[in-house]
Structure formats: C-alpha cells, structure tokens
Length: 291
Image 1 (cartoon, rainbow, N blue to C red):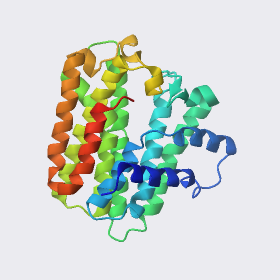
Image 2 (cartoon, one colour):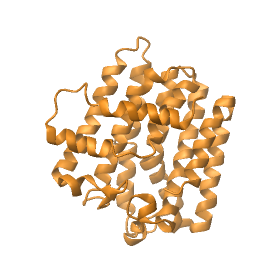
Image 3 (tube, rainbow, N blue to C red):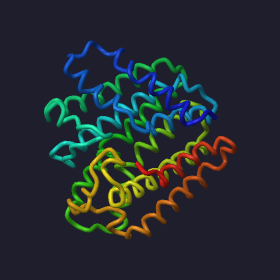
Image 4 (cartoon, helix red, strand yellow):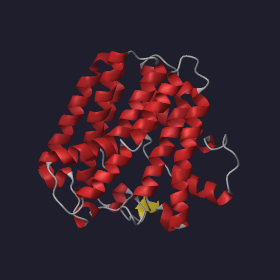
C-alpha cells in the first residue's frame, strides 16, 4: 500500500482535468464548479477508493475517474448543504461558500453540474470494463449518494432540527448523511479491484463504522474547535437546535463512542493483513483530527 499523501497527490493532479472530457461548459458555470471542487480538503473519499482498489489487487489508475467523480459528488453535497435554505453557512475550507461567492442560483447550478458531471464521468469510464466492474462501481456510488442514501440523510437532518431525537434516529441520520458516501468509496474501490463478496461485506462494515466515527468526531469539533481551525463555521448545531451525537450522549461519551466506532472499523478490515494498516490509520485519523 502507498501512503495517504501519495494517493492524495494522485487525486489532486487528476481533479483539475476531470471536467475536460465534458461538453464545453459556460465559463461562469465552470468557474463556480471548480471554485469548490479545487478548494483543497482531505480528499478522504477518493483516497479511500483508490486505496481499496489497490488493496483488492486492482490498479489505482483504472479507478481514478471514479475517485474524481466521488469527490465531485461530495463537493456538490457541500455546496448545497451550505445554501441558505439548508445550513446557511458562509465559510467552507477557509473561504466564502459558493453561494456567497457566486450567488445562490449559480451555487445551485454548480452543485447540479458537479453531480451530473460525476455520473457522466463514471458511465463514460464504466463502458471500458468488459466484466461489468465499472457499472457495478458506478451503481454503488449512485445508490449511496442518492435519495435512499446521502440525500435521505440530509432530509433526516432537517426533520430532526429543533427537537431532540433518540439514539436510533441520530444514528440513522449519520449513517445516511455521512457514512454512505465513505462506504461508497470503499465499496466501489473494492469492486474495481476485483474483491470477492466476503471482502465487500467487510469493506461495507468498515465504511459504515468509519462514517459514524467521522461524524461523531465532527459533532465534537463543532463544540470544541474554532472556525479558524476547521475552516468552517462552528457552534451552529447548538445554535440551530440540531440533534447531534454530543447533544444526545454528552461531550465525553461522544468522544468514547467515536473511538469505539473506529475500533469496530478496524475489526471489520483486519483480514486484509498488512493492507489493513492504511485503513487503520484512516480510522484513527477520523477521530483524532483537529479539522
């Protein structure tokens, strides 16, 4: 397995060219799409996809278009999540959010453009696989980012606002809103690498526990960090009376729960042997991060 930095550099080199295969875009639309897509970040999802592909015996180069597409989908979700009708955030990755920079209408269209571009990129690439792996990977991503996956999580988040939900409801929200896209990265990467069904099942379990650990840690950071450290607004969960793991379980117990989810993620992926070390590092990083 390569290092996180090596995968990250591969993603960063590919992303600026990810839109080139599309039909020519209106310059204003492309500017808005690239403003958010190329604004940096951890690139956790595409990195996980490439690493999972290699862990299963595949080539990262074959999976790179899917990794770029997944980052487009993640970016679209952030643009829409920041809109005034949603979380109404003005800061993302340390600079003005898309609707602040380009206006609300263009931000919506930039998100729409990134989502549709991601689907086009995956399908264009999938036809090059003679054994159906590309189609299966594209379907795994589309399903987990769609109406029954990440979008459903966004709906649950809005519906739970202003009332204290129980643990089952908050867990269901986190599994959809955050964990599904992380799980999509592992699932699609393993499919592209030719993993068997047992490894796919374990990979899905890893992704779900990793997603829960990541989101619980995010809930903790919203309480304990600063906007300068996170590059986005903090304290909004409490301000908007959102149901979070911290509001449900308390700060210290939430920290313990995040650690426990990370441990469960490690147990799921342990059969990968030495390759599991990379994914273990990602799980630990999810709960120990400061931004």
